[in-house]
Image (cartoon, rainbow, N blue to C red; front, side, top):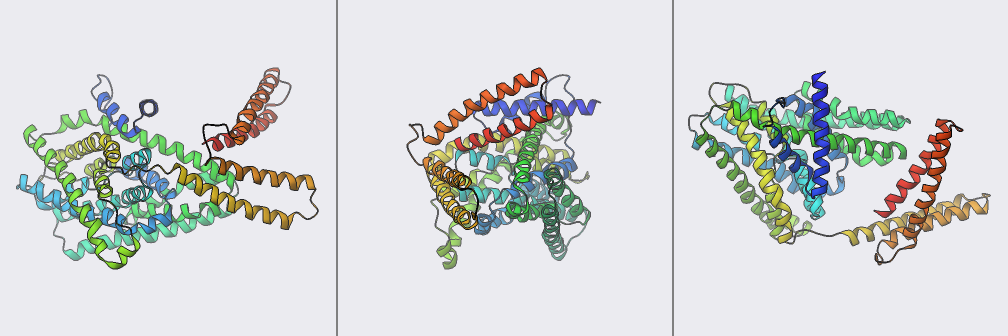
Length: 518
């Protein structure tokens, strides 16, 4: 009973923390981390330990899967070069840089163990950076690069951790490491494609939205379990499956399934993200109590690792951004960004729960202080979130990187809606046949209304548009209808099933009205 109660309490605190974050105007990960840090010292509160397998198998796969489902595959492919430079190149450079710095501070530690800690702290978080980037309105290409980096860098880091741990325990040659990388990444890609094709086939055959939701929820967990059993990269497999299915979901699922699945995944990610950052904060008391290294050494190592991460990311990003454009093909394909863009990307290096989970997977050995490594990983998460996470919006605004695309998005939406409506009207004329004229006129009016709503968003928003007036009046009518349903329910004259069906029709219509107001 106690584990169930603890889980309910954690979820409730996470929900309240997320509500507080929205009220204060902060992103939820920052607020929940601070809440967790404070609660970790509350007397009587049970200690909550993060199990690495819980994060790497229970939390990370669905979060990465949903992020991949929502990723624009075309934009991802166009930004693949900078994404790989960050997700793979920067992770490797960071792991080695942190390893050498740590070895210089503590020369008694074996170099492979130092590289293991470097790999642990190398990957930025998949949740916090993109949440902040979207909230402050960074350019879409910058958001795509940050999202793409966070989708793939965990795989690179975890492979490096595994290689470094293996090298610390036994002699590993260059070819051993190469074989491990090829098997992990290549196997993950093949496995991800195989399961994505299988899931796509199931989605295409299924007509029940509940079964569609069940398949979608199971997919990332099945992929990661099989990948782990096959000793391939579960992260790569989940991301590949998500990218493949996300690009095809509009053609695989029914409209009802898509709407329902989106709502289900939004709830799942909301709860997982909230609980996981709360759990990170709750680790503070236990980590402080378990550390055996002296306070001065711990502070020195933590500060050195943090500064190394910041300096290396800046030192890597500027040449990676501009030297590549010396190649004529890249220069012709990619516009040269102002220096503010790589500056903002460099500062968006917040770490998250994967860093702590990877540290907890490090084996207990006599030749390095595991508890120090775990504490440093935790401290890096806190420092990067509280320092970089809170100052990133201000930096982006000061450098002028924030981009308001409201008018541009409205114009693009109106254009594509106009083209779609023209195609719909042409199909209507071709298929109308002997249909009643009133039905054809009604369909034409509905199509014209959708076009008008899209174009009205480009007009003067100070005056009430016709569609806004329609929405206001229709909501009043729906409110009157709901009152009648309420009276009928209280009197018991009509069955609950009939009332629920009528109420559902009103819910769908009102939700569409709310969508039109966004």
